[in-house]
Image (cartoon, rainbow, N blue to C red; front, side, top):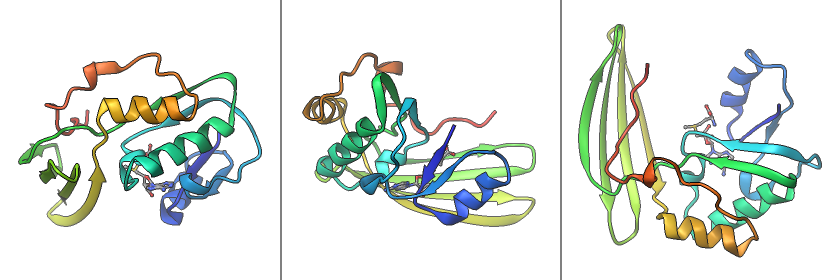
Amino acid sequence: MDGLDLNKEILDIAKTRVYSNLYLQNILDITIQKKYDVIISMFAVLNHLKNTQELEKALMNLKNILTDGGKIIIDLHNPQDSGSKTDFYDNMTRTMEWHYDKKSKIEDSKIIFEIDGKKYIDSHTFRIFTIDEVKQCCANVGLVVKKVYENYDSNKHGSSIS
Ligand SMILES: C[S@@+](CC[C@H](N)C(=O)[O-])C[C@H]1O[C@@H](n2cnc3c(N)ncnc32)[C@H](O)[C@@H]1O
């Protein structure tokens, strides 16, 4: 199992936990020569892409390192609403605030983690891709969408940590 991320800090953390080849690469510019039977893109990586052109490019790059008959599993963040929510855990509180702009399909989010009294803030901008956009981009690069889970439910926001 290999890994790829744009961010060196994330890869440095991963290095302490897995014995894999970890590639510091942009999904838009993959130079890996190997082929994989399964590629998994977890936790909204592709939502960091700016538009459908970039999504298509990323999907093409993944297809290029996929074996014939291989599978790509993509996890996308897809709500189309604005709001806020706080979750409480043993030693942590997580407050999320998000604003979705329908016209641009851009979501700006701020997540405040308070762990043992110390605050950590993460802000990010996501492009929310509709299921039709995803299907079109897949079709454009010759990928077939076999299954869409959870009905691509745009009412769900934020998973719980358990
Ligand atoms: C929410 S994290 C998920 C991290 C990891 N995939 C996991 O399963 O724990 C999203 C990751 O996407 C990475 N990312 C964003 N844009 C990227 C790009 N263009 N190419 C590669 N990685 C990217 C970020 O650096 C970040 O680590």
